[in-house]
Length: 290
Length: 342
Image 1: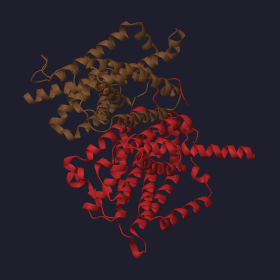
Image 2: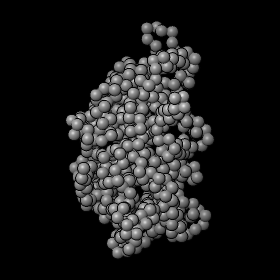
Image 3: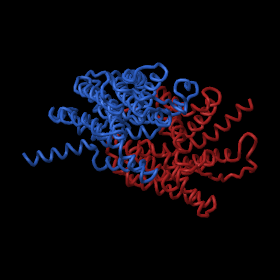
């Protein structure tokens, strides 16, 4: 039983990270109906930036804040420079461009920072009061960070005029334009937010898995699964899905298939959800008129 | 082709593919050229030596795999980001048959094809419900998960786990005065020819037309009586079979299979291959295969990160500048010349 509880809690902790990346995926999906295959590598690159800033002598939270800002700008610029010209291109071209971005960020990180595995500090001291036998301080912290992010985003979307404009731009671009919303700027904002969220996720996962250019590939797959389970167009659903995937991954990995096949769990989850309930738990069913 | 309605996820490839919808690229080359190319290819076996022959064999193996991916993505409009997984399956089928069943190398190639046909068909059945992006997502996950599956400990007796399987290079049959490398190259050339002719005929047939119809407008095709379900999973199966045959050939040429040779990078390489060669073209497979065989090797001399960087830049640059790939470029040049002449 103790073992079970332990696995459950550990699952929640990794689930928090999947939830964050899933949230970033949903941001971009909502804004542009693209699945950002490069999200994981962008987050990994941001984490390397944070690492470099810390190596340069910045304190943790200073580097954290600066990285979030840089990631925001970087993602917004990518939207403007690479993704926007593709908005009328066929689906395959967009997917190819995303894979191109994935590959570029991967090689950039390896080239600039090297392929050796690096330690990344956790902002939550290991002897903090909220740590316990069952759950390390970092695990608690990671879950809290994920929850805070979703709360912030939820309030941003629900209670601020810009949040409303962003939702409007994503849902119906032409009409939004007619009421004076700058749709292009909103898309950039959506991408920027996704980049910022991804960077936070990266900095939360790095202390656990260590920092190297391959660190996010697996995380991205789980985040895909999480976003799909929750519904790829629903931020709350994505977070819920992320936690579910984290727990499932740990429990199935421990008790059913063994840790070596954990990634295949994600594969099965993805295919399963897509077949049984493509709209996810909280997603809207899309009915198209033909 | 590009509907403003963004919620519609039907895999409309539009631009890239539609521009080269007339799949008779092979017929576009006259027989004289084909025979000349073939003679050159055979001649290569007696000019090139050792490592170069190995590279040429690998180019042929990649070309077959790319042909397979192009049948699925270019001609049927289903995006796969995980075809490296089928390449791996083909390689492992060949290796396991040779190692554990003592099968002759030439028999493992069709066996790999048949095995991948079945697996691909089965993967294609649920994939029917996955349109466009979602299929890309599922296959992406497949490509990432494949090395883990190959390392699975209960299969280790067969797959050799992390260590993989070491194979022997086959000798030339009938006492032909050929070295092993020469024979293997010629064997690969023969397989490639057969596969190429089959692909060409398939795409020219009614089935090929049905596949392209589904790509261009699935619903209209359905309304015209094309059985989407059958053709889409069949395309997946055939595509996987081609890629599996390519994988089997590569395993025999490399004489070694291990899970870590079939990472996501391989799947991405295959994607790069069809994008460079030209999506929805037959001959593009050769340009793509040459590219993914030689460019990463060259780039690696610069730095470890360079092959990935080159791939990334090439993918994005081609999408922006010449979405038709090499074949698209060649066609454009030809059109311009005939325009000037006329």
